[in-house]
Length: 317
Length: 288
Image 1 (spheres, rainbow over the protein chains, first blue to last red):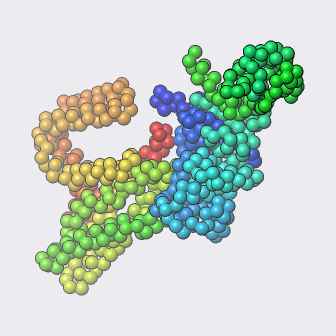
Image 2: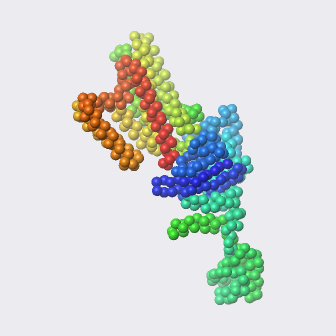
């Protein structure tokens, strides 16, 4: 559906996007993930024709966004980071304008308007001035604008920024709903959000694509060592001897607390269940109770940090 | 394009700007009609339009300042870029909306000579010719305003810059008379202008070689021409300045000569500045 090939964007000496290439398939929800300033918005702006690339190409449904802009733009709906609203208009007037500009036949406009406003739940505020609406409603009007005319691809730049938790849930549900019959691309620097709604995650750091896979695959790929945290009544001095009985242990640290010890054990391989059993019986054998035990897997959070950290280290070298 | 046109029109007529513009134009048309045609009993309606042309200095900056600058400040230009419409359609739609706002008071003013003709002998051809000239002048000045609004993000800067340019344009005819009429004086002024243009080229492109080339061509060309035929330089700057002033072209029509060249010139100025506005909007995508 969307092909991005060797995209570069430079602002003077600063490189915002460097040699970015990826493909977007039809009918899935994609998440752009990256720290602030990673080039997410720049990439989205280029994909929607708001910005010209220094080099590289973007094809939407086979149409080049620069050369055949009009055909390509008919296929996309875009919500930029800051919703592009005319503040002295009402949502109904604003959406009517967008509908006309998108070339929706005059007869279908009221019906289409009703549809997008009921989907985004903005019907109650349809005739109030946009400048008097709350941030959440403004964001929804922005989304209504993007999905107007039923475009095949909906691109949302940080759609949940500035919303309250309940609104975030609603927007997420809306995005999931959209994902059923549209291709949705959204960007975020919040991991849990991308994890909750997206089928594929593209992690961008310093303008480069560092990973592109489903959340499950990414987790599996990076789940190298598991860590077990346990709280025990054992004395600090006896712990190394107890741990020595468990073959999977490859490292540990002990932290003395008021009346117990917090032990952090690093395990080899993925067989954390067997290792946990061994740990349990080792402590039990020494007649020392384990009062708490948690297995910490490499989460997406760690992967994200690791991937974006590596970049920095590479730069430092 | 019709989407932009309708959107802009409804914004001019839902807030005050369209009405204020019309009221301002009608107020001055009324005052001058009273002074010239009623009190002094002059039958030339075109003098009214000639004298009130200075209102453009005030109303054009106010009317055009927000047209593209505000889109950029509110980031609504991102919407325009991502919609399946071209920048040509955007700029033309906005310009046509401005023309409609301008034509509404003009339609009312067009009634004045008809009403006046009931009380005296009005030259209808001269009156309506002047009205057409007034429209062309307005179109050209508004197009310049649209362009200025496209190069900045701030309404205030757009309005200020536009006012200065209107003012210079308005007084360019008087300024022309003050320049040196001798051949040497004209040549030196042209050399100076060539250097200023080259400086501008350097500032805009940051390309020293191009600027030097430009300076060499302009200054060298002037000197060469001066060496070949110095007599042609007499009063040249004054003529050029006069031709550059849009108001001077309008005054030709006011003086009773409906010269088609004036209409063509004014409308081409409008066309050139609309073209530049489109280019300026396209350029934003590269430099943002």
